[in-house]
Length: 94
Image (cartoon, rainbow, N blue to C red; front, side, top):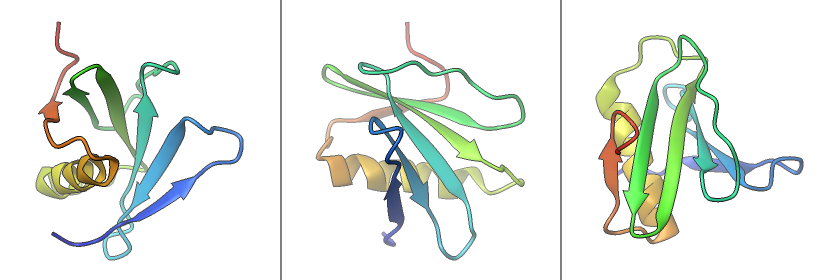
């Protein structure tokens, strides 16, 4: 699994952005337990549940990237956070 870069915003301490240097794809991660998430039109969203942890992911500047790359980046980030039991969903699970 390739490595990606993570940037942490000084103003948005609860949200990180995952970067793929090769494709220039960016995915923003939202911690749903500590903040709100409002989906943007034209972007791709995924949701992750892992125990009591809930995360939302949204592409930034989506330009028809492969869905597999997006899922690889999300799974890499979950491993980085130590969320080994993470389940990725296309819609928010009820």
